[in-house]
Image 1 (tube, chains in turn purple, red):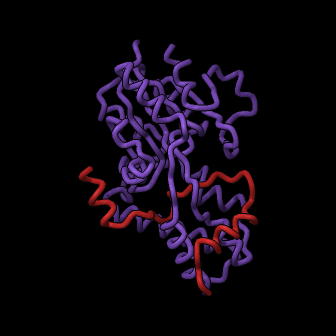
Image 2: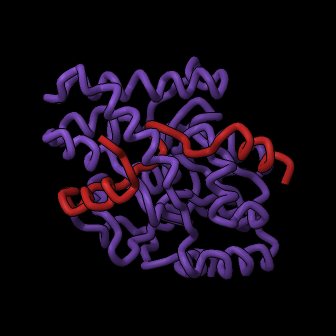
Length: 234
Length: 41
C-alpha cells in the first residue's frame, strides 16, 4: 500500500522548549524533590494511553482537569499545603516565559515531504492550546491537520487519537508513516494501529523510559533527526 | 519574595538531569488574545 500521509508527534520530534520552568525547579525552591513514582503517575508514563472524554468537552473542562491533577500531585509530595498557591503562581508565571522552537532541520524536511505530495498531520499528547504552540514554532502552514490529545479525548497510544487524526485526513493506517520520539506512544501505538513507525533519538535528548533496551530487534527505522523519515519512505 | 524568570533560571542548576521536560501539563502560556489572533491566521 502506497504511503499517502506522514503523522508526526510534536514535542521532542518537531519542536522543543528552549525556555521554560519545570515543576521540579519550582518544588526545589521549596526544598521538595518530586519522587519518580509520583512523577510517573501524575505527570508522565501512566498518563499516556488514557481516554478522557469528559475532560475534553471544552477548554475550560480540560484546564480544570489539569489543575486537579496538579493539586493531586502536590498533595502527595512533602510540600506544606500552605505553599500550594505560591507554587501554582510560580508555575503559572514561569509558563508565561515558555518559548517553543522548531528543531533546525524540521521546516526543510516538512517542505520536502509536502513536495512529494504527502499529507502532513501533527498527532500530539498536548494540552488544549496545541495550535498556538505549533504557531509559535512557526510550523502552522506546513500541516494539513493538527490534533491534540486534549481535543481528541485520548492520549497516545490510545487508538482513539489515531482514528480521529486519520479520519480528518481521509487515509487508511496502512498508508501512513508515524514519526515520534517516545517509544510507547509513537512506536508501539501506531504499529498496533497498522501504521509504519519511525523513531527519533535526537542528540542530547532526554531518556525515553518507554523504549526497550535493545532497539535493534524491533525492526523499526531509527535515526537522529527528521531526515530519517526518508529511510522509511524509500 | 519577588518571583522573576532569573529566579527560575538559577534554579535550573538543581534540576535533576534526564527528566523529560513536559511543558504542556499544568498551564498554557497563551492568553485569550493570543488564541483569538492565532485562530484567524
